[in-house]
Length: 274
Image 1 (cartoon, one colour):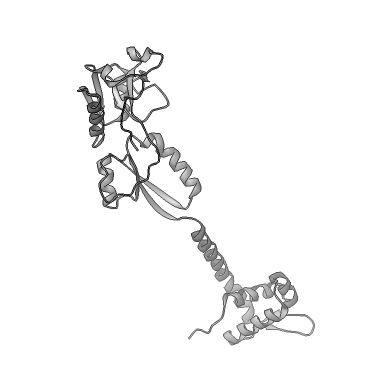
Image 2: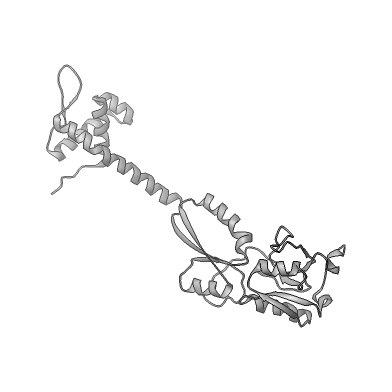
């Protein structure tokens, strides 16, 4: 059966063994010499051995067993220090894995900056990302494929807890040569575009959202193209294939097709993404 001794006793012993002086060790450890002597004596009793010999000509000298113990406990004390630091870290910072879902059109606009800030504040968390449409993200949340999602509140049913981070109003996008692009105020209503071809971002819940915008304006859209890619919609608008309703505004007006697009305002009485 293992005999009891404490980590403190081992730490005290290590310092005394290094300095070979009770007085010097007590000063370094900031304890009284009697406290230190008692701890060493209790350790010797627990181990049933003599750790130091006390010659008359000098203060202390390690016994053969004491010298072996001093070597053996170095690794133990290092591991104890590491365990202490790790425990402190667990108490003051978050660690582990966080699975984040993100709505595909939102991902390139918001996620890089959010993740950059998050990693600085919580370096102990490993983040993995699932990029998907709104319907797939809701399924992923319910099935535990992601822990949290950056998305719009469209179609959220029961069982979801959400927090509004930002209100994102919709806007109309036209090509640079469109008459509305040259208006000084760059404002427009959907009814002003009635009869013109449109390019639609066709994703679950998103399509219903845009249909709602048209219904509010009393306009039946003349859909020319439907795409699942945000940049594809912008590129087709830039080449004059139609106008589009979108929410996220890109800093650059250039598109992958080489053309330019122009934001000409938000439709009246339009619901916003949150």
